Image 1 (cartoon, rainbow, N blue to C red):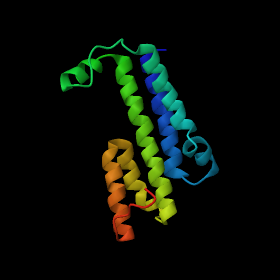
Image 2: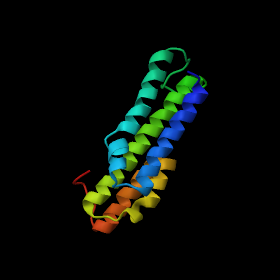
Image 3: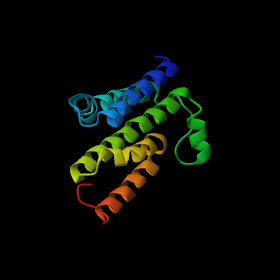
Length: 144
């Protein structure tokens, strides 16, 4: 399948998952399609498909910036890297949502964290951890 088409399908799928997380985080549909892993698993299958059928087609490696640049000149390697981000950022957003609920943090408070997680992954996670520690008045390691 064409890398551009897979890219578009993956982005749309991830955005649907993020829509559930943002707007209906505790509804049954979110639980069924996102939290139980259907959307992240579908994206992981795209990743697996791209990796299996294009393994070795790209030049480069992970040992240097130049090797990484060379690796990601291949559209399928670039797509695999992008889908990797889509899956893990969404999984982190899910964890933030359900961890906040478990700790009694209102969903509205974590929306900025979720936006940052969607756009800047680790920055969103750090923001959530800081927000959580401020609201709980302690650095919270339990229920991580």
